[in-house]
Image 1 (spheres, rainbow, N blue to C red):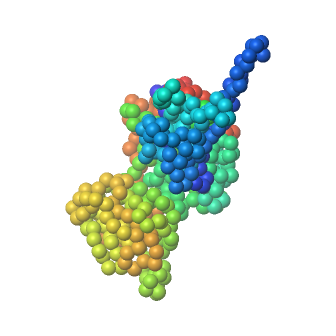
Image 2 (tube, one colour; image 1 turned 120 degrees about the vertical axis):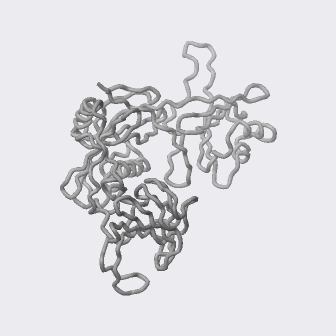
Image 3 (cartoon, helix red, strand yellow; image 1 turned 30 degrees about the vertical axis):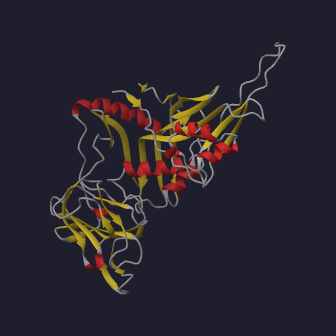
Length: 422
């Protein structure tokens, strides 16, 4: 099977006032006037950007550019007002400095721009696709404090924007969600290598695409993942062709920041004395979704003393997981309900004996609390025998890319067209 680079999914754009990357960047200058041989030359049109400011409506922006009344209402009818966020950039074109606009261009999303062109007494709306090109790059570096910091040092600003580096860190955490708890397993002295698709638009934006292969050295031990599509469904496998998926996730909350390690004699922050603390606390913002670590049945969901709002999920082989101090429960989560791994079951809160918002998580085997990071979850399912040779061919290619020099570009093509790597 040949390795394919797929079109990146359209991502909903949220504009904010600080640290944003606008859909107006690296735009080419207006075309030049008629050639020197012409007896009469036409001056180029004037294009100027205008930004939708905080507290403004579309009418404010258009009025600032000489458009009012029925014309504004007609233009507004061509736009999805729900997507008009603070920071959105409009490119306004005029034929002369003192003339009314005859064209307005705005990026309505990562893959489309909308052109509004004046035609006599009306306006015409034309949607234009934005071309994205995909290539393959490799980043590698040492981890001194966190993966975020390591990526900031290893990835040039010109190669990937800071927000996309953060996204890449979360993508890597998702790849290894069954092997590592990124909030506490990564330590100074560890290292990473990652090969991924990078998308670049015709206007210069860059985005992180699919992680194709990744390798982490954690406490001197390598953990490796290779992306491969089995019957059209992408997944991640180790070098032996075993799926990285396991019966339990290592962390039950997406915001992976622990407030205290697993400790049998931690001083309880409310009671003020040493107390058996049979779990792991994840500090997170109130309302952060809490997910089921594995498939199971809800044994109970309700108030439980010092735990506050508590969910207990019963799994196979005598395993139970407990989720405490919740602000509330997800719809349908009640005693007897079936839940699936990764399903949102509740939301981080500070109920019960708690000094601040966090999730208290316990992993119990036959009633005894166990450190989930030390549980052997066995091996994943092997790739289908009929696909093993094709997987091995792709794995060899990706291994070669992982061991290449940093920031090696492998292939470039429009994101709208699949590229085959032999």
